[in-house]
Length: 383
Image (cartoon, rainbow, N blue to C red; front, side):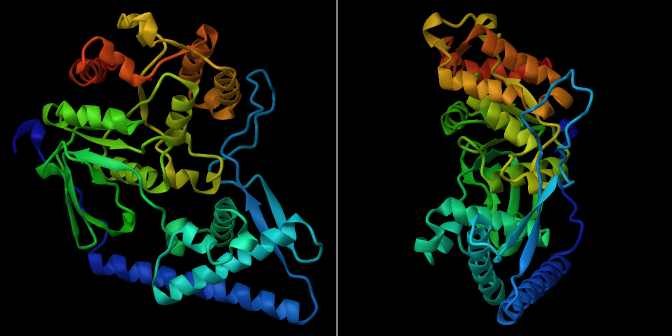
């Protein structure tokens, strides 16, 4: 293809054999470290001693931001802000947390030894009376990642993927062909194993992330990708880890700008912030999951008047919406890194209204895909 349609073929940093060898070596090293920790704990207990494990605490944002405060907060994307000590010495919360961590660690050890994968729900059903709920397993997996300075995919614990992708890209996921480019308006599942992706080719000019599957399907029905050389991704609400990793991977590999389209409400804003800044729950992995340069395309509170939408599309913020918005406004990263985003959220709260992306269809059913998105990108109308 000539001119602006020139293909981007991502040159791999290392060959397939080298990559496989490196992954096997990393898995073997992690397995040795897990076995060493388990052996040490068993020996300590057998000797009548109470083993303790020190876990770093990470925090990528806090809710005590004050622009007038002389001392900045200690939040960081890669520096711990404190520690937790888990011990069997006292019969308290930390004892239970250590018990859960060890049981999950045994499962992970077996997964790595047998080169198998499972979900956190699979792990939960191995000891449901002890774990009580899946969230307890989730916390233990985070603890293990922090303890061994690794990510979840290194533990062979895989999530159920819910994200979708379409557009001008093709790649291999292991031996599986994912050729979105041959049917650019068809939805494909986001890859589970980012490390298995290879042979990426794209002629896209940008990546568009949309909050909801309904909007994704609207774009597909309007053949948006046929008209616009792009890649469209949706996390179908709050994005899961594979969706965030895949987006980060594409942005870094293809050097493409990424735009995000969310509802004009506090929850849409929170989803947008998750892509840009990461989540508090996975603060230890935020630097590997976030896309710092993602651009907010809309929809903005001001779009309601700008595009002359009917009043029936406008909804009042509920008390819960207000509490959510006020909590987000207090986050330190909005003061430090995104003051324009903060101003837009303040405007939403001040006006006390919200509306969905689909409200733009009041102008015409294809207004979003034919006019709103292309014009905003062309004219640089984003934050």
